[in-house]
Amino acid sequence: MTDQRRITGLPGLAEIGLGNFAPYLMNRIMGRYNASLRADLAGLGLTTPKMRALAVLSVIDAPLIRELAVYAVVEQSTLSRALDQLAGEGLIQRETDAGDSRATRVHITAAGCAAFEAMWPQMAAAYARMFQGIPEDEHRAFVATLQKMLGNIRKHDF
Amino acid sequence: MTDQRRITGLPGLAEIGLGNFAPYLMNRIMGRYNASLRADLAGLGLTTPKMRALAVLSVIDAPLIRELAVYAVVEQSTLSRALDQLAGEGLIQRETDAGDSRATRVHITAAGCAAFEAMWPQMAAAYARMFQGIPEDEHRAFVATLQKMLGNIRKHDF
DNA sequence: CAGAATTAAATGCGTTTGCAAATATCCCGG
DNA sequence: CCGGGATATTTGCAAACGCATTTAATTCTG
Image 1 (tube, chains in turn green, brown, blue, cyan):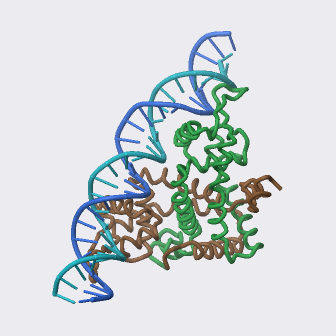
Image 2 (cartoon, protein in one colour):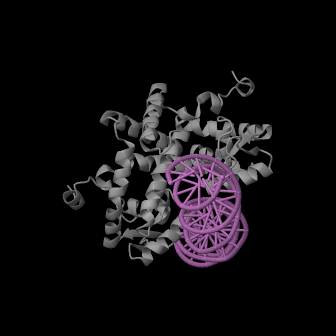
Image 3 (cartoon, rainbow over the protein chains, first blue to last red):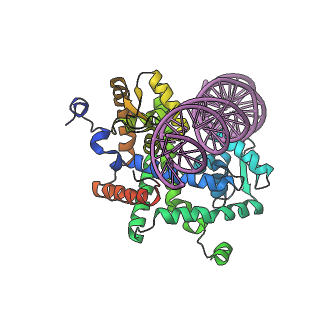
């Protein structure tokens, strides 16, 4: 038992081991995944926030901006500026919500769908690489655990 | 089958579903984990790169800066500046490598260890929350899958 | 139903980031 | 042992980021 453990009663990071600490491994993996995507995307004039917004919009229709910020994992102020650019490029459209004129809903355009489809093969390739050699049932169990974890830490109901 | 699937042969994101797409879930989870830690750390005068460097240094002794950048998942130029600050605060020390005077090894100081120990309870709490309600064996299987994934995508041997 | 409190989104502003270039050192072939 | 190419780190710079504030609209409360 280390000094720290003896004093605090908490197992320390050294005892768990970096390579067994799930948040560390997840940061390592997503760090590389995101960096690799970012490099690919730069060639298409897209940044990470723009790509994430398009990805979510390809699946969820007309969310509010604050919802989109949660789904896309982008700070709302950063998203606001990313949407400025996407709108300027004709990839999305902002529209005031019918029932609440403070709120804005975001729609993806046909050009936006096309832009997302152009980058999807690279995301799919990175995804395939990540799970290569991992059996289907292990993959499914992994995703099921992720879903529980998200349920544990999210602040919103979506 | 969607139009995209019929044309490209690739299952699209909509078919997989955001909530079943592992990289998406991992970004959601780590986004919140990191944002929550960052808020806690701001009070201690630490940023994410500084915290990550300290965390790695609490476990790995005297790595080269480029190794530390990989372990800590921080761009090397960003790390270089974070180390400037940490050194200024007396939490780490840079020392030219004995065998290669281009290279620099980084040592954590006693004050640096103390700083990491001060923030560890918050990291441990976020970790515990993330896995609350998840059985021990499921947790272990999850980490084992993460280790395979890291092996699949990493570029370095560490 | 008036006014306070809350919520949505955008914006100002200082900091941080990451790419690319610079600097310093090392290694290899001839 | 000299010069070209590789490697380790730092630094210049423009773009991106996040916090806090602002603006605008809605909802709650007495």
